[in-house]
Every structure is written in C-alpha cells, then in structure tokens.
Image 1 (cartoon, helix red, strand yellow):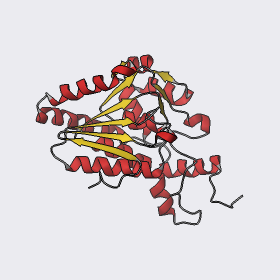
Image 2 (cartoon, rainbow, N blue to C red):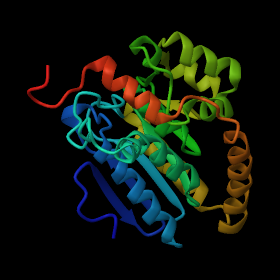
Image 3 (cartoon, rainbow, N blue to C red):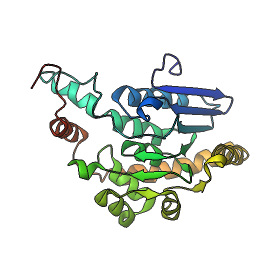
Image 4 (cartoon, rainbow, N blue to C red):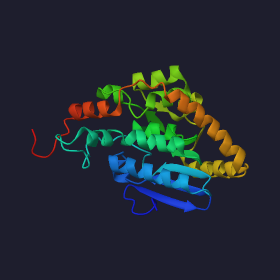
Length: 256
C-alpha cells in the first residue's frame, strides 16, 4: 500500500477517515520532490479505498508548510539528463495538486502558522480549509522572480475569485487568518487550542451526511473546476522549474 514506506508523510487511517501529515517539522514541512510524490501516491491510494470518505491534510510541528524546498534537490536530474527527466521533476507539484483535486473523498486542510507558496496551493486544492488564528498565507513567487506554477492561478481564481487571487499572487503580501476567512480562503478560523476540535466537528458533520449525495455534489464541483482549468495558459511548470534553478543557482556539488 502507498501508506507504507513513507519518509516525508505520516498517515493515520481510521475507518472512513484518513489523516495525512506533512512530516518534516525540522524543515517547517518544506515541499521537496519526494514529499510531493508521496502526496500523489497517498491520495491515489485513498481514491482506491471505497470506504474512505474524509481525508484531512495537516502539518506536523510549528507550521503547515514553508512552501517549495528550492535548496534541497537530491532528486534533481543532472544538467545533461534528457528533457523528460527534467519535466517529470518539474511537474511533481502539479501532480500532487491534481491528485488532491481528483480525490473522490471529501478533503479538508488543517492549517496553522506559516502556509507559504506551494503550501497555499495544497490547502486550496482541498474542499474545506480550517485554520488556527495564527495562520498566515503568503505566495512569495513573484518576489523571487517566478510566476506562480502548479496550476495555482486558475485554482485560486476558482476558490476566492479573480480580484482576490490577483492581489494575493501579484502583491506577495501575507494574508492573516481573519482576512483569509473573509475572502473564503479559510472556511473557519479558530483559536489554535481549538483547531483539532473544530476539525473533528467538521469531520463528524460531513460523515453524518449520506455518502451518495455528498460524493455526487463534489463530483459536480470537480467537473466545473476541470472545465475552468482547461483555460490555464500560464507557463508550463517545466519552464518555471528551469527558471527557478537559474535564479537560485542550484548546481551539482563542485560546479561553480
């Protein structure tokens, strides 16, 4: 099973509920290619288990996620590797996002503290987002000289609207919990001490709803979202990845 042999995630499976934890607390759950591949594998496994109705995504330790780990690329292909190898690594983030979006179970994000870059998109890909009142969302990509990738622009437009998504992406400013709740980026913001209880209440409420109508309604939203994403004309993730490599001077050891 995909729940076994994980190094970057911790998974708890209890009947109809699966809880997935980003589990690199020493790195503030930064998202390296291995983490993203494990997310893809776990959500694909969840999709194959008919009895699972709810998946909760959270972050271990002091933050939900510090975003993409640009400094730790042990799996980055050598510069002379075939283009297909570079494309595969470049698309790891989008694959993870797409797998969460396609999951037939209801998905919740349990967020707290820093939710940065790719962490914002992982949360936005979930059906519902419950956050502690210390949660701060931020997309710093444009300040780093990069356009937002992973299909993030159409995803955020779908979730919070074009005007709000434009401000969030293009100003790169932080959005606190109260503002994020007003915008719809958070469905509920609660004191940190109450976060787990609030998430459990949402899980119980959703489990109390008959399975078929809830799943069918989610499928309707998925079909609408899929149609909207067909219009994503942003740069390919492989283009963004190559630019990120150049901007951050990620080079093999011994290379100037």
